[in-house]
Length: 195
Figure 1: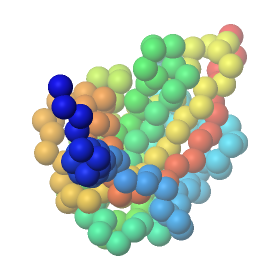
Figure 2: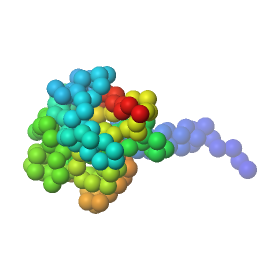
Figure 3: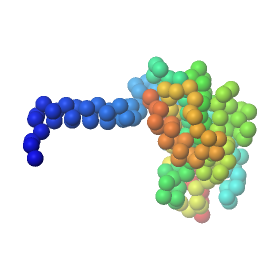
Figure 4: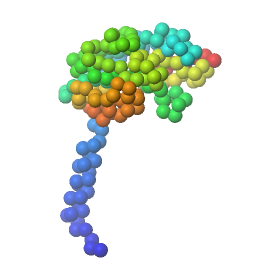
């Protein structure tokens, strides 16, 4: 077996690195891209009104208002997710998935997560959450658990619309969101229920 010449090896490695870079997810944090809520302060307990109404929980099941700013140039749409990484499922729990939010939009009003998409900006749609519904599925950790962390994230996407089926799982929707993300901004807030 003949050794590969150094120049050929360098070309192969450079080509492989270039190919890998073309599939890499871009830097997720863009300077100045922020997400906040007038209803929920980052790091502070989530108010009970945002708790689910079912599964032993008795909240109002309303989604909080969200505001974002500083999206990078080239943003063609936004997606918003709310995820509980502490849910005892092995994969967390997706409480809310909103996609196809027009690039001109910089906020979701309180209770935008009502069923039927009527309270969302025109064109935006809600994906299926882990309750199996297409709306805001409020926080509802098991009673007595250490307070769970709820991660609210807005994604600036490089496409105007995600081409996914209406009944796509939150995991599939999340995959497509991440594959098209230019930048993201998040905040985390806890919620727990007494035993």
